[in-house]
Amino acid sequence: MHIGKVLRVPRSGSCTKQWQVVRTYQSADAKLARFETAIDQDTEESQNNAQRMRALVQNLRQTIDQIVAGTDAKSIQRHVSKGKLLVRDRISTLLDPGSPFLEFSQLAGYKLYDKEEVPAGGIITGIGRVSGVECVIAGNDATVKAGTYYPITVKKHLRAQEIALQNRLPCIYLVDSGGANLPRQADIFADKEHFGRIFYNQANMSAQGIPQVAIVMGSCTAGGAYVPAMADESIIVKQQGTIFLGGPPLVKAATGEDVSAEDLGGADLHTSRSGVADHFAQDDVHALHLARRVVANLNIKKNITVSYVIN
Image 1 (tube, rainbow, N blue to C red):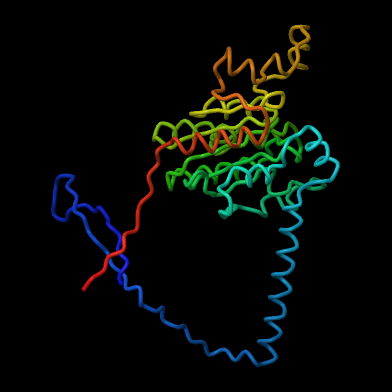
Image 2: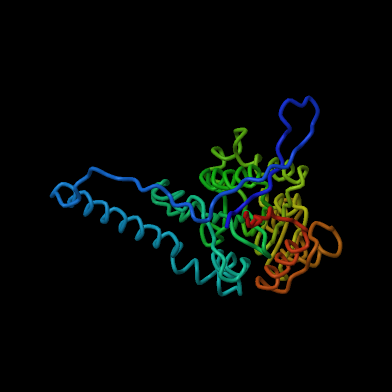
C-alpha cells in the first residue's frame, strides 16, 4: 500500500502558465530512522538535568492552567450573570464536537504590565475546525478590562490574522470589546502595525476571498465596532450585542440626549435598519450555531489525500 498526493505544479521549461499533474507516493510500510544518542542517562548530571526539566515543565503547566482559569472571580461572575458564555466556552461551543483547538500565544501578556493581570493578552486566538473547515478564531475576553485592547492584544490579534492570510483560513471574530484600552492608547494607534492594521487586514483578506465572519456577543465600541462592520457576514446577539462608535454617555455629553444602548446600536437596529449585521441571534449559543451554519455554506473544499495500490 502506498499513500499518494495529487499536486499541480508549473511545467518546467514553459514560458506560459502551464501545469502538470504530479503524483507523489510514500510507502505505508516506511519507518523513520532512529536517532541514536551518546548521552548516558544514568549519570548524576543527566538525572539532575532531567529533574530540573521536569520541574520547569510542571511550572509551565501550572502557569498555563492559571492563565486558562482567567481573571478574578468577580469579573467572571459579573460576565456570566448577564447570561453570557465565557470566551473559552464560546470557542468550545463553536468548534466541531471532539475536535482540537490549537491555541496561539497562551503566555502573551504574562507579567507584562505592572500591577495589571492580562491573561492570554485579553484575547484567545487559535485554529479550530468549524463545520469541517479549519478556521482562525479570535475571541475577546470581556472579563479582562471589558475586552479592551492593550498593545499586546493588538499584537496577538495581528499575528492570528497573519496566520490566516498565509494559510488562507477563514476568520471568525467573537467580538466583545470596548475598543482600545484608553490609558495605553498612545501605544496602540500610532504605528503601521498597530490597531488600525486589524481592519486593513480584514479588508485585504476579504478582497482575496478569505471569509471574515463576526459574532457580536457584547459591547463593540469605538474600534471594536469596525470588526463586525467590515466582516463579510455578521451575527449579533439580542439584548447583549451592541455596535456603536460612542455609547450612550458620549451621546449624552455631546447632544444632551438620553438613549439606551439597545436603541443606539442593538441587534434589532442593526439587523432591521442599518444593515450592519446580517443575522439576529437570541443568545450566545444561538449565535454560535448560526456561525457554524455560515461556515458550512462557504463551500470551501479541502485537498484530498488519495490512496493508491501499486502492484
